Structures are given as structure tokens and as C-alpha cells.
Length: 268
Image (cartoon, rainbow, N blue to C red):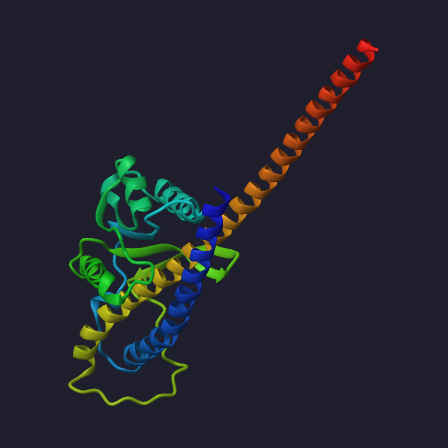
């Protein structure tokens, strides 16, 4: 078992390095996308339903979990946080909908008879945008169609190899657009409203994908830490059992020698 957990730790460490790199490389794209959208929203009269607050009759929750366990508190922490939020905010299952990324989240809410309207299972360890594109697009469309009036995402934010933080963000409607700090000047063709119709869904989808990359890096880090702890525990257990074995073996040898010496003395 120690050899297995050690191997899993090394595999997770390798995957974590690549996942961390993917998450960091995606940040400049996301920031530039936000800058462009914020500039259009702040400096023009163009408007879009995704920028408007409305009465919240139904809330959507997108939760990012893993497909497998053996990752410490990675899944339980984010699922506990979302579950407690739902229990506090909603009295009926008609008031919310869950979009589950990962088998652990899907099974968790399904077993509790909570409405899982969309899900995706079996994502690769290093997902591409194409892997999540359909789910992200359909989730954003749910907001555009009025099926949900608010979309929140719950995931584990990667802080470091030994630290992951449960994070929740409101993705829709998009209300954190501040284009006042942007000094860039843009010329719009064909016009601002049509550009927003294309960019805003893409921006929302990119936020979902960015959270997924962040969550994947956290998953591999959590699994690496859990397997390292398991390896250390196995080493401690082996040392303790080896000591007990050696003591028992020494006592048996001492007993045999004592019996032999006693037998020889009796013959004399």
C-alpha cells in the first residue's frame, strides 16, 4: 500500500505542475477579455440582458468536483459549502438548480434528491475548452432564456501545493464591469450591441473554464498532499509493526535459549 500511495503522489505531483501552468496561462486571456467587455459596457450606450439584474426567482449553482476520491477534503469542503448555502437560501427545490462538474458532485446531490439539471463526468486531467464548451454554453443559455435568474459557481481555488480555498463567485448577471481604469481605445465594427451579444456569452463561458482549470490544479494538489500523508502514515505503521515483530522475535529467541540452558543444566 505504501508503494501504491507513493506512486499516486508522484503522478499527482506531475499532473499538478501541468495543471498549475494551464491555470496561470489562462489568466491573461481572461483579464483581457474582461477589459474589452468592460470598456464596451462602460463607454457606450449598448445594453445586454446579461448585464442587467432582475428579480431572482431561481438560482443556478455550478459546482466543480472530481470524478475520483482519495483527494483529502477537496470534494467534501466545496460540497459542504454549497449544501449549507442551499439549505439557508432555499426552502423548495423549485428555487434552485445544480449544474455538476465531476462525478462526486453529481452523486452527492442526486442521492439527496436535489435537482441536478446538467452534468458532465469524465473530464480529462488537463481539460481543453472544447471539453467544457457544450456545458458552459448551455449553462449561459439557461440564464439568457430566463430559466435561471442568477448563476453562482463553487470550486476550490488553487493557492499553493498545500493550500486550496473554497471559492464561490456570482457569474451571471455580470455586475463587476468597471471600464474606468481601461486606457485602451477601441473602434467597434459593426457596432457595440452586436459585439456584446457575441463577447458576453464567451466571457461567461471563459469564467467557467477558468474556474475548471483552477479546480483541476487544486484537485491534483489535494490528491498529492493526501497521498503523501498516506505514505507517511504507512511508513509509521510499518516502523511500528517492524519494531513489534523484532521485539517478539527477540523474546522468542531469548525464551529458546533459556530453555536450552535449563535443559543442559538438568542433564548435568
